[in-house]
Image 1 (cartoon, rainbow, N blue to C red):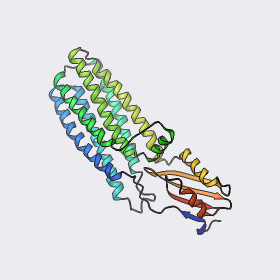
Image 2 (cartoon, one colour):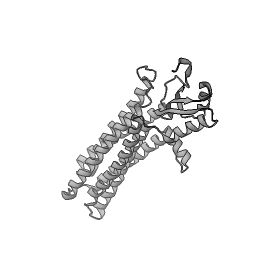
Image 3 (cartoon, rainbow, N blue to C red):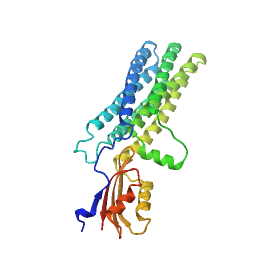
Image 4 (cartoon, helix red, strand yellow):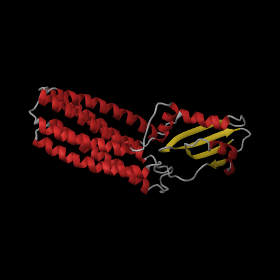
Length: 303
């Protein structure tokens, strides 16, 4: 039987929002404004110039503007309720919930683009290619600017350790917003290519073909984001982090872990329940676990 003295905690603070929460909020809001303005421009231009590619891209951006607004709202909600005791482990996973919802939107967009492209492949329409291309280029510039806003301060390299570290600290809400912008940029590039080919080579068929390719790529991004955010929401464990915990606790030989639960509670933050047996004290095990920097809330149980 365990007594209160057998249980210790590494932290009681439930602020698991990530290191760049406020900065990410500001970036996302700016991108929402840029995307909304460009969305209106593309929808109007697509209607005036009879460009289905431009009109589709405009409605595509409209859907993304809503998704980006959801991302910004998730940041605001997480901050506002960070100290709300109703959330047992804080609001760090709100961003993952928003990311999951955005991934579903991406998947629906991919299906819609593919279906519309197939229809246009068999029913081509006359397009004002020159004017539509200008608007599409402006849209691409806006997407590139938005991508820079959302990716500031992030970098990746090929080292396994750094990749594992990045996975621990990944903000899936910001990642979903960034992927929406990339999807917009992709559709803009494909629209420009199709419009130029239609104007100069009379390859009208290329527009729907590019739409099908874009739909497939967006679907692949959506699947990756759905998989990663669902894993966080379902509290899946990380084998690498579990092994790191075992190495720190069991290496001296005076403690053996018989029960271990590890789950993510926010970007770069994990919680854990560590049950052990042996001659070590709970205070000793707790000190060993401070070396595992990803752990922000730990319960240590001795048997």
